[in-house]
Amino acid sequence: MKTRIMLFCCMAATLLLACSNDKSDGEGREPGVETELNGTQLGEGTTLYGLVTDTSGNPVQGVVVSDGYNCVETDANGVYQMIRYKKARFVWYSTPAGYEINTSADNYPLYYAEIVHKNIADRHDFVLKPLAAPETDFTLLCIADPQCASTADISRYVNETIPDIEATVETFKAKGRAVYGITLGDIVFDTPDLWSNMKEAMANRNLTIFQTIGNHDHLKTETSDDKAAANFESQFGPRNYSFNRG
Image (cartoon, rainbow, N blue to C red):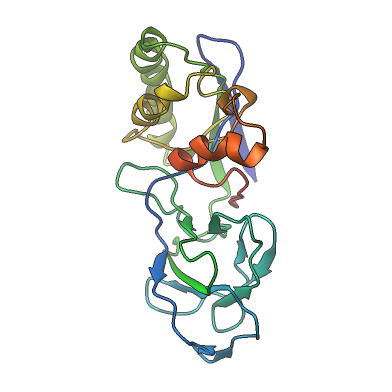
């Protein structure tokens, strides 16, 4: 496996990162009285479940699905099920190496759905698009600590850092290599009002950028970690996630 990792340091000094956002590529369904799904019997007490298929409608077995606290695998029928943790806000799957990274319309990674029914069963289905072959030669660009604290910082990020990144991406894509991006945290510097600006800055680019949460991405005024990260999650989705390549 040939994996190339490149580090981009932005104008500030430290960075963490996040995930994807917005709308899920999962299909939320109104809860009913389902006891069986695609040939799989749903266990008593199941509160989170769904079906994972490929674009031809075939079930995909062995996909890890999580609510951020518990992990299960899809069975031979492509069905996952669990008793979700009471604080869980999302359900997400770990993209297998042989499938494309699903993205939203603005090219953010989209591998999750928001849990909408807190007290009753919630169903979310996911569809995966197979690759011609698993990617074994790819490049991962690591974007270190943007730490934008003002609109002037964002302007520099958009006009200086992003063009450098996109130009580098093109050099690898010209060689037929897949490229992914990931921020390493501290997307903003204690400035939650700039979240939408930073999300827009990294949207619709020539690479898909995963996000990581940093200490400066937490709301300092909150007393619990979950509440402190809620603003970040509203933009990018789950704090904890995974995807497989190589």
